[in-house]
Image 1: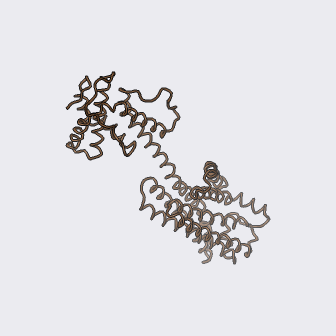
Image 2: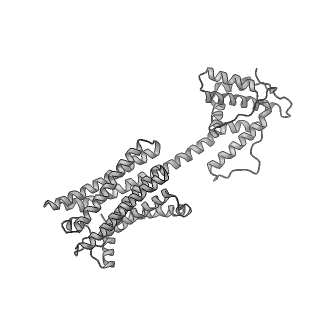
Image 3: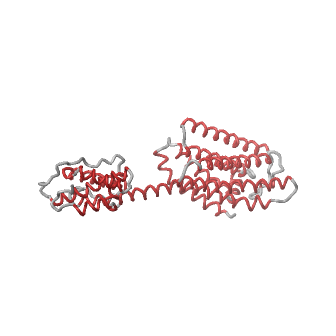
Length: 395
């Protein structure tokens, strides 16, 4: 792999981290956000310092041959710990238990980092190896142990990540489950990376030349695994945000039938309260709900309780469930009241049995049901057909 094969993903990680830093400054105490930023920083660092040009530059700057090896191994170990800490915080649970588990992983892998540095300082690796250090020095005392230790730590982290993600995926659904499945695929590539490295190491110990596995096959496998794992972490966050936004706009649109129905009879939004085109959907929904409730207040004297009760019974007879039947009844009452109010601009004809306005106890979802019934319910359509032009309602 060439230098750009490392630097391009490193730049992508740096850009992602830059977008996260403002949120981190505002919410420094958020452990999940800290874990995400740590993972992005360490992932970018691994790609940067594992690139052969950087390896050569670090060795030259420090004047220590192969000092890049423990540096890269320490970064890989820290990155493995950051993945475990992120998945622990992402999964959630009792805060104290989450903090305790995170500390255990950090301390455990911190001890591995210290051991890697100690082993390198005790070993002797005078000849610089930019690409094949793992197989070239795998028989050298202390350097051998350092190589096996970092591979073992990385393998343990990959196995734990696969197990945790598989278990968690059985308890969730939707985009989160899809993201966890992608992470598992990515970590199978990481395990393949470890396997190729161990094959090369064991081959040297047994007298075979299997350097190809370590030097040429393992790096691209690791890059693919890192990319897939990163996508797995991103998918639930981005796709869930897109899905939530889509659902919010869908709710806004579905409220449109009820909003337009009321608008034909009563004034809704105040002239000065207009939404700009860039206003968020949540704010638009709030205004539309407010308009609808204001419309209900204007139509209150025209709401007919007996008509509402009859519409409810008809909906139940047609097989509607309790919630749908209530929505149909409210929609029928609103449709009749709109026509009565339109035919009585002076407010002279009022019903004797005025009913209270519909009470959407579940917020916009109940209003959406009423709006849907206004457009699709045959019971509501029958009320529209029989509503007298004078404003009197069918008995």
